[in-house]
Length: 155
Length: 176
Image 1: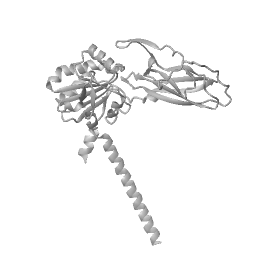
Image 2: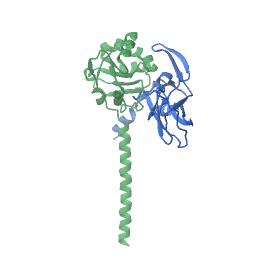
Image 3: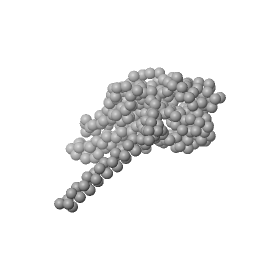
Image 4: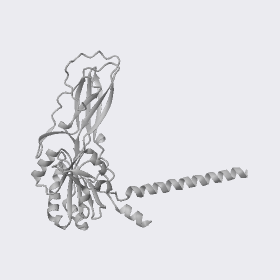
């Protein structure tokens, strides 16, 4: 019995990290809220010691609801020996999304894809987080926009 | 009265039995959870290399195998790879085989392999291949993740995050 116990207990998954890494949805917590009839504030709250890549952040809406994504704010720039110029975010990043075709009473799910790393020496695969945004009944009818700058990597 | 007492005794016995079963199940699970992970799923992988040729991992059975999950988009992965190159160069003749599994696009892997003068196979995989790393300890599917197997194909070490050069040499040295 001791042989089983001792063998079991002596085997340890090694780690150079010294602390347990957070799961990506806690390291890069996504939230979204309606701040205007057609405007959603999308926010990543980034835990200390973690960072997100600017060019790996993408948004989609389900249904599409005329989603328009502005240019993301600039992050801290660095020269990567392999990828060249890259920008990263720490702390938080906020972007206001437009839902130009959202209908009153409709629920729109904002899907945010992100990818980042931890200073302790690891990187996460791309992660998608979703937040449901109920559009209030009293919202004014959205202005029609034939060609909104849709950005959906799901299509 | 007697029947009530018997019922009580029976109830107490049942509680004791249930408690003992729960305890033994818990202990069993704890032992199972701490058992050295099984590399069978990992060794069953067959992945294309950067040139598209299928490379089953079983072909390296009998060698001390270091399987490193990495990607070009993972800075810490790239930083530790020169140590794998050195280890392969120095210890390859003694029976070490390093294998990289890149969760990446072939063109990027080819370019990075050329930059680094990679001297070991770089296999290409999608995120689904990372599922084999989950039972080996990479529950977050993060990179880099390294598995060291002995000559019998048993897991000797797994590590999330970069390996220190001295640590890598020590682990491999003990197995060669």
